[in-house]
Amino acid sequence: MNVQTLTVGAFQENCYLVVDDRSNRAVIVDPGSEGERLVEAIERSGATLEAIWITHAHVDHVGAIASVRRKWDVPIYLHPLDRRLYEAAGRQAEVYGVPFEEPPTPDHEFADGQHIKVGDAEMTVLHAPGHAPGHVVIHGNGIALVGDCLFAGSIGRTDLPFSNPPQLAASLEKISALAPETVVYPGHGMETTIGQERLSNPFLNGTARIVGR
Image (cartoon, rainbow, N blue to C red; front, side, top):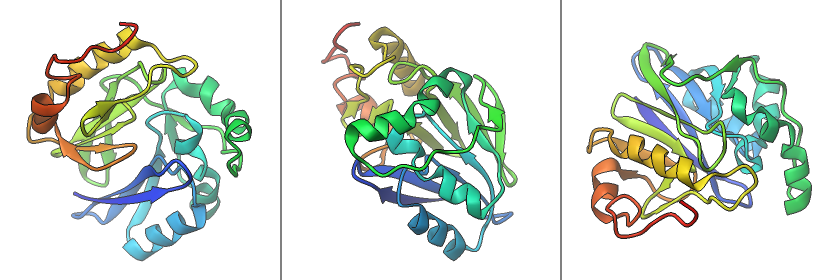
């Protein structure tokens, strides 16, 4: 499985193009901004786009969905508990003063434990609330697309509307139970591994506590 990182927009959000090398089919994860650039990257890959996966619906993760969907009529996947954020993303954009095009209505709902595919490669959905109510982590084939739950050396914010510190703490316990060699692809910053974060991330190794937990 090949993962291409595309860092976009004012928030420097990581969008991921995930390609199953065997079938040459792909999904795009969290297309947050710079729609034309993302469309060009997908075209350059030569892969057939199958779906748009959204880990959570904050504005910096959904701002280029409309551009991608206009080019390819593929289904959009989102956890139902984030529909409220998804529908309010335009208002989020106004607050932050960033360009935004309203995304189409999601086509399918993520669910905890659900198995989904990129081409022939199967992955699993983990509902991981805390940063956002409907936040999901998608893992399998040695990788984990963790959105804004976990970063290299840090964790997602819990001071945003609908965030929940105790829920994030519980989600992090589940994420940290993944195999140590799992490569972590976060919504911002550099990639890491579960094993590295268990050792060095203060919120996973017990040296720091989530405020409000």
